[in-house]
Image (spheres, rainbow, N blue to C red):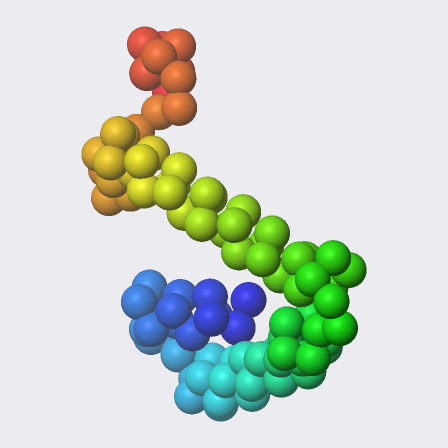
Length: 98
């Protein structure tokens, strides 16, 4: 949400951009979220993990799922022509002109 706020106001709603509410506060939110992620996830499940079976395996399975999703996303973007061209998700919608 914090990153989307910054990107949206810098790219689309530039005339409504407020440096405090659309830059400073989201950056503080990103910092807080990053700290919580580091303290509660990385330290517990990866850096100070007691064993692979109960703790660090969660991290590595998550990384594996993330890589698989990234590969399928790239394949899908290449197959459909990328994210820049609007396209329909089915031939039925395309045929009906929706």
